Length: 481
Image (cartoon, rainbow, N blue to C red; front, top):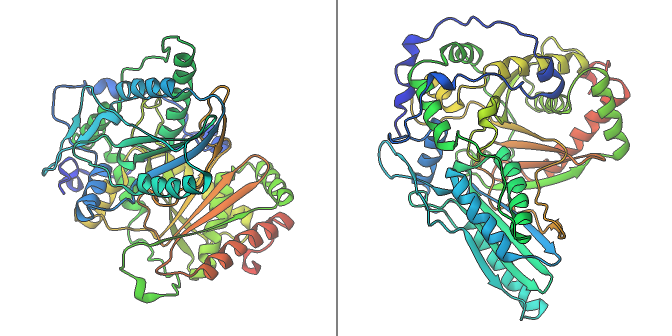
């Protein structure tokens, strides 16, 4: 794998001159304000060869080493009940494929690879009709079809890197499974995909023309922009910040149960919990009172618990970040998100309130320097093109409401949580916290080669216990937690 756009940048790094700004919107909503971009400095050359971003190169390296792997497959499955118009859906999907170049992308098998975008003729819809079978036979076949759909590897060279499976199980019952490769898709893309699919379905089912707003900056343009910024040194100040921030990183001394699993391929395990409605409400109100977002509050809880298990005063936690901080980045589907590293010190945080405010300050600085992709930082830090993790734990916060499919006149429910793909995450532990409106729920994704189910159960029990103690007294000493 070649990272030509970041080679030799070490010699050009300037000392950090970070200017503190009043990011009031960021501190209240944990989303950077939409500002003016620097896109005018980079005229688009749509006839030029474009190489994948450094984040995409990392994924392509994993794919090359594991050709039958499905870790980067992202699947969602819905049950549709009602008078569903499959023709309208097919027309809507065809329109989205033409609208978003990500759905027509492939990546040449070369060194370096190049981005390939097909002009047309890409079909992503697959159909199965099981309505003539009895329920017992349907259930067997459905299970096989859904597993095959979720686990079937994509052809990253020829594409397409998305597929939608429709399974008709009755006159008014249909299953819809969407599987997409992470290399062209992220969480922001999911919300955009479902919103536009719903709008197009509504218009086509009524015989109307599509009326989505036009946009001129697409995913291929973003890829070219990011590569040009790295190649021309536009991120030098941010790079210097990260090189200083992540120098001599603490190595997580987390007690694993099965040491023989270290270095073995990641084998995912899952365990979920619901936080009590009353405790959820008290915790939410407490964070609001102290001007701390739910994201920061739960991240502080996670950092505290990792510290308790590892007996370290400093931890590094990875958190996914949308990086859609300019208006030009809001309207296209593509893999823009990246992992932001939060280096959190607990030495001078005797109470949870102190810790939460410290985490907030760390997050503000991270957001101010979010344009540099993590693989570029790792490449410069470690002097190798091989991606080596600098963090072993990950935190993901999903606000309310979550992206979901909504079609007019159709009742839609999640059919099952497809836990076959896991977005390429290979950390020891990943804690997902989801705001479902009435309360919070969480899921722990863990490496079952290192940890048992009983450990996961104990870990989540401790998450709830710490939140309970914080709600009782946020000013209490954390040493007693």
